[in-house]
Amino acid sequence: MAKTEPAAEPPPPAGPPPHEDEAPLVYTRHFWAALAVIALWVSVTLVGVYTRTGLVISSNGSHVEVPVVWGVALLATVATCIIVVSAFRRD
Image (cartoon, rainbow, N blue to C red; front, side, top):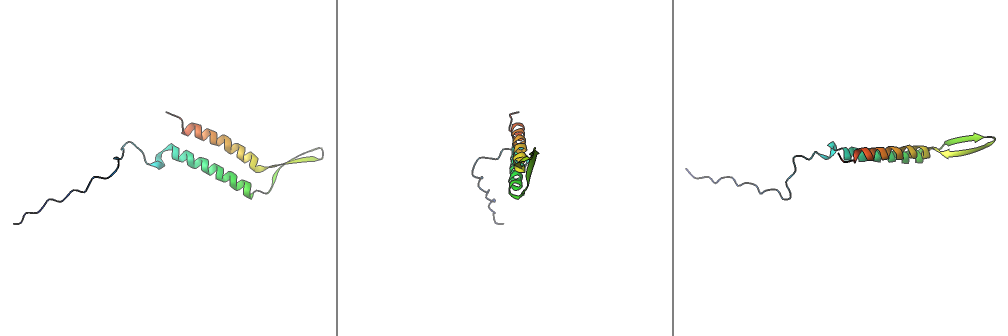
């Protein structure tokens, strides 16, 4: 019987070994917080582009027209601050 050579092992992968304690990106709260902030500001942009009417405040024959996007942007700013503080704090 002929001797067979043992199968050669593949070379080790280049670079640092992966850490077992690291979760995939989609399981981290940083990913979802960033995605939420992006979604907030995309919605503000869409409201600003596609909304034609504004909030009209009338008093004694005069009126002031405020674009609706200002209110949406104000609420998005508050929501962004809350998301960033809660998601990126140190535990």
